[in-house]
Each structure stands twice: as C-alpha cells, then as structure tokens.
Length: 183
Image (cartoon, rainbow, N blue to C red):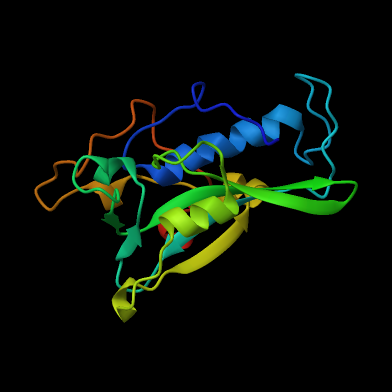
C-alpha cells in the first residue's frame, strides 16, 4: 500500500504545482531519496519504486478533468477545465517488479491516494474536441524539487489582484527557475 499523509499535507486550492512540491518533499523525506526504507514503520520499499510529478497541459491551456473538488458543487461529474494541472504519480514495486501505480491529486474527490486505473477512468475521460486533448509530462520527483520555482505571477490578474488567494508561506524559489519550465 502506498504512503498516506493527506491530513498532514500543506494544501492551497488552485496552487497544484506548489501542493505537489510539498508532497514530493514528504515522499522523499519519508524513506530517503531512493525510497529504500521507510524509517517510520521499518518497511522496505524497493529502489525500483518511482515517484513522478505529472504536468497535465496542452497548447490551449484548457485541461478538462472530472471528479475535481472545484467542480463538485457545480455539476454531477465534478467537471473543471484547468489551464494546467499537476499531480504526483507513485509506482509501487516489490522485488524489483512494478506492481501498481497511485495518483496523489489533492484536488480530486476520488480516494487519496487513488489507484492509477481508477483515476484514469474517473478523472481523465477523453473529450473529442482537439482543444481538450491533454498532454502529459513526467518529471522525476527529485528533479522537480531541484528545479521547480514559482513567483506566482501566473496567478495575478491584470489589475494585480489574485485569481485565487496565494498560500500563506513564501513563494518557492530555486536558481531562478519558474513553473512555466514544467508546462
């Protein structure tokens, strides 16, 4: 079973890339950067287990997702069309063999974590319109922590007000990199 720590996690609606950044820290701190041993309970996790950050985007900045908290009160399917979305993907392994993959999406109403196949069927339904076709970019979690930064300017409106209230903690900075590098 994959690690679970939703209640312990920093969460700010509409800041998925920062939410996942902090989730990556939890994963890599939980059992070391190679995910070999979980010091909390002594379980050994195969070094073949993998943690990725997944950017979901397209050239039209129009990403349809179902079963999202932001859409739960608006429609039965929990439909939301984000400009992009970021999730964490954990692939569990045992004895060097991949077993299952789990999605960590703090914005979904689906279980947390959610088995990949369940998430794919429930949240990633296909849409026929070309403008709604998604593209996926997988980045190793360790790399994401090394290069991700955001000055949050993508969340500012033309008048200088926020599209959504920013997190209470300071913006994440790393060698001048930016969220747009991932998209």
